[in-house]
Structures are given as C-alpha cells and as structure tokens.
Length: 114
Length: 114
Image 1 (cartoon, rainbow over the protein chains, first blue to last red):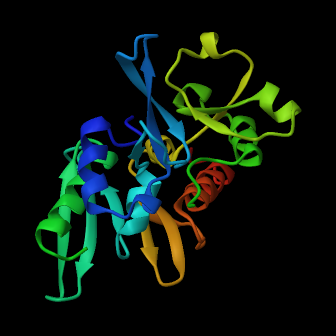
Image 2 (image 1 turned 180 degrees about the vertical axis):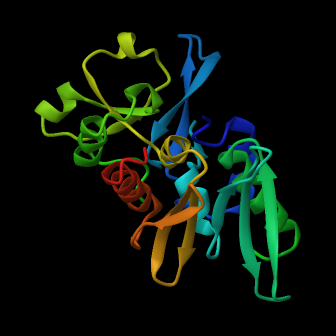
Image 3 (image 1 turned 30 degrees about the horizontal axis):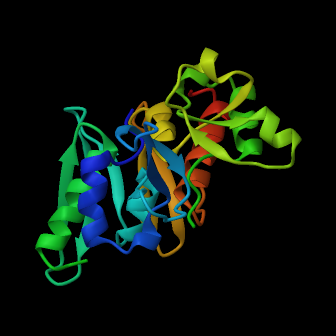
C-alpha cells in the first residue's frame, strides 16, 4: 500500500501547499563526485538544501476540510469533502488512498478552493 | 506536526492483537529506543535487512488492515466506521486519524470481527 506521495507528486504539492503541512521529506544519495544516485524518504520536515517535502496520507487529509475516505465496490478509494460554496460534495478517486487525496488537492487547487 | 504513524505503545498493542507485522510500513529501531531516541522510519528495506525493529503503521497501512473501513472527520474529531454483516460499527472520536483507526481495530478485535 502506497503510504506517501512519490517524488513527482511531492514536487507538485510543494507548489500548492504550505511546506509546513508536509510530514516527510525525500533525501538524495550522491556519489563522491556529487552525482545523484537515488532518493529515499525520511520522517519529518527538517527542510534543508537538497531535500524535497513529502506528504503522508495523514498529512494530506489534514489539509482537507472535513474529508471522508472510503473504498467503493470497484476497490477504488474515494475522498470526499463538502463544497461550502455550492452545498455539494467534491470527490476524487484512485486505486490507493494517497493518489486519491493527491487528486483531490490538485482538483481543489484548480477550483481555487484550497 | 500531525501524527504520522502508530506510537510505540500502539504498535505493540497491534502486535498483541495479532495484526500481521508484514502489513506495517514503518518501523522503530530498538537501538534508538535504548538510547532514548524514538524515531520512526519508512520501511523501504526488507525487514531482515533492517534488523531488530518494531513495526509501525502509517495511516495508509492502517486503512489497509481495516479492509473497507471508512475514515471521516467531523467537528467532534476523526472517527472510523466499518460495515460488518450489514451492521455499522463506529469508533469514538479522536483528534487524529491514526488514533481513530487504532481504536477501530481494537474495537473490531474485541467483537471478534477482525
């Protein structure tokens, strides 16, 4: 089960969300010559040069306004929040809850509802 | 910062309840605990390579354990709900989703539904 945003998702969320909302970070491993050889996740923000903030499922849900997270009959995870501007609900779904939350945040940003 | 995974006590409780430790996606190092440092790490390595660790569960891993559990936030706090044999079982309300999920797992275990 995916537990946190991947590198690409993290970079996108870093453009949208307050960095203090992140609860993890990606660190990079380097050769002696400074070439990046890979990346790995760590708990905690500790923003510093060369790290990228990363969000766990708990962190993403915490930036949403009264979210619900359920799994439907097709085994998709659905995130749902109330849209106070229209008395309707906004939904996003994916085959894991992290991707569903990520899609929700992207959608809310596009709708200027974040 | 929001809670990112089960505490040491919660992790040990889940192990006592018989939750499969292979469903855990994070861990505490016993060596760190002996030094008075309690820090959680994402489990990106095979368990046998990590050594003598204590498993921990992120929110995503807990939701996977619950298998079709629902998680939601209300003004009262976070709660979990499961439908077992057409009967809704709801946890109490907590100030973070991790505690709500752990409480639900304990409740389902008490009722022999997990």
